[in-house]
Structures are given as C-alpha cells and as structure tokens.
Length: 105
Image 1 (cartoon, rainbow, N blue to C red):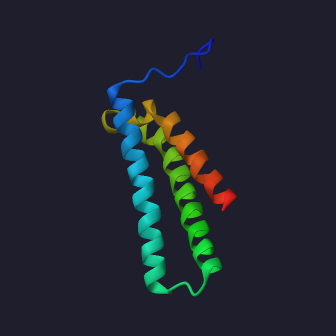
Image 2: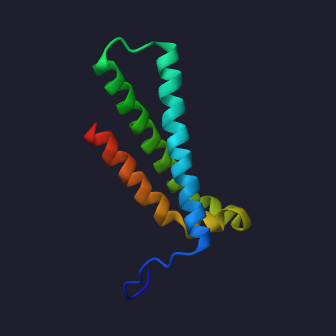
C-alpha cells in the first residue's frame, strides 16, 4: 500500500479490461438464466426473480473466488497473471456491484 491516496489512472488497457469484465458478467448471467429457464421453465414472475437472484449470487461468488486466486497465481506464473493482479481492484469493484444487485433483487 502506498502512503498517500492515488486516484486510478485510466489507460487503454484498463478500459479494455473493464469492458471484458462487464461482457463476461453479462454473458455469465445471461447464460445462467437461459439455461435455468430451459431446464425448468419459470411458471410466474416470482420464479423469474428467483432465477435472477440465483444468477447474480452465483456470478458474485464465482468472481470473488477468481479474485482471491489471482494473488497466489501471480506468484506461480507472473507473466500471465501479473496484469490481472494489476487490475484486481476493478474486478473487486465490479464484484461489489454484482453482489449489490443480488442483494437488491
């Protein structure tokens, strides 16, 4: 940790990283809801809400698991995982918003 506060310096790599993360979340939640609806079609509006809650909760838990594994993986293979470690804060903030959407649903 640094001594003083340092704002996020946006660059092209971080914007692309965030776009990939957002697309990944949308793909995960969309796939989860599509497969869930095909396996057992929701009968009413409450069943759709329950499916959305499950999708967002599963996505948040998966994202948290990935965030927690980035640190040890960056030590094992720095060449591949060090860029992920560099942008881990963005991943954590997006995880918070997905978990907040899960709690709000």
